[in-house]
Length: 527
Ligand SMILES: Nc1ncnc2c1ncn2[C@@H]1O[C@H](COP(=O)(O)OP(=O)(O)OP(=O)(O)O)[C@@H](O)[C@H]1O
Image 1 (tube, rainbow, N blue to C red):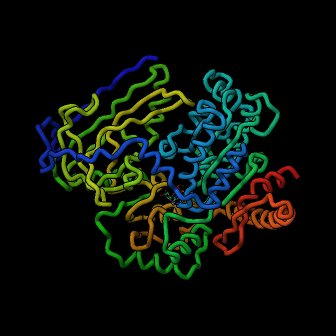
Image 2 (cartoon, helix red, strand yellow):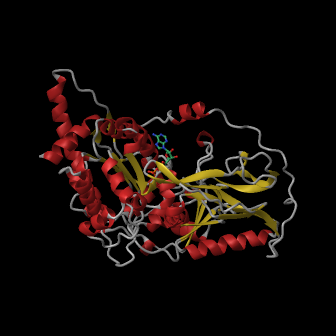
Image 3 (cartoon, rainbow, N blue to C red):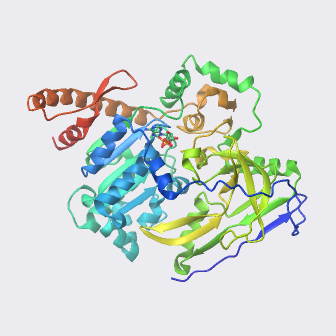
């Protein structure tokens, strides 16, 4: 493997546009943030302390039994958090090198420390590809073939953006390359996502088919489970309103609240501005940076990787969240794009303001004698941000590394980029919004209505796809029939005292018996 380095340039120049290296950005902070945040062991201990719900536990126990599982649920129900735990479990079951962790978008694949689904497949343009075409394209790629042959488990996050044709194609490829005549060639599949959020993007046609419409969908899973406990929001009125929007309900009485928020509330200047178009995001961020009229510091990423596969990983970085160039100055609103200190809330999505710069002496081989930003996070913590590393993986192998400051300008963001994030405050411009799920995805980023300022909101923008609604209705019916089956099994088994299960009311007040759901789902699938 050959590595090359682009070289880092940390330069300061006046906002006026005249480039030139200056000594140090003017600020009053030259003391490094001392609290070097505990040991790795302590970090690990804290992470494992998440109080999993019964639903989440049932997923973990199904995975531990070798089941293939689909995890869905509203925004903020902990799908991604749970997936991280599932990955740990799968690695114990199959060994690390046989577990492939993927997501449909670059941003979300970084969030789960995986790779994009397309990079795992080894083919980038899969639009309207038949299963046979897909297999043909993969057959020309040794590494891709070996990944498929090796795979004991495949994890796919943000499934809402994967279309049915691709999902069926992947199942076909798995069966052929594993040489096992079982669904997915016997690979343990764990898939997560919310079909009420952003749908698949198909460049060649307006019609999108969701993954659940794939012929193999039902046979792919032993358990399909909808998580019902929402963690991101706690205000029941807001939760109910979001659920109405998720269902595409345009006549909900509380929608008037959003119309009021559109016109009346004064916008908090620290709120993140969300747009549906990237050009609006770029424009607003550049405008806001200029208005500060301060010296800026430019951080260029240092990339290294396998030269032969440079096109591949460059593309990955382009589509990922790790920025190529970060241009900031004192006063700039920024967002962390990597988890730094989870237990302190300094995670991917945490926002703050650059309050100064500190000399970067001794920071591992980049930025030496240059400047590191000090960020005061909205949560109150102040932290010197050092460069971190992102990886592009090919299965278990790291094929490229990017070192960069994990910040992006955060006055404005695209709604697509923020899928999966929790935002402290948001100013959402919906005037250019289009398509199903976009209003729900945008609004569900914040924790409460007071954190929201809206413009361009109209009830007509709320759109839910009928196929998605039908899918969730079917899933709910399955759950209900499973509950009935469970109570039968319970009474059968109670005589032998072998069954223990937890009862928990779901959002609709029904009683769900989750510990038995795996068995029942398998039973339903086979019968
Ligand atoms: N059992 C739990 N107890 C407490 N908090 C939890 C639990 N599970 C998840 N969370 C927290 O809930 C928040 C939302 O989780 P996460 O981002 O995984 O949701 P999600 O379902 O993936 O959302 P989205 O669909 O918007 O991507 C996170 O802050 C996460 O740490």
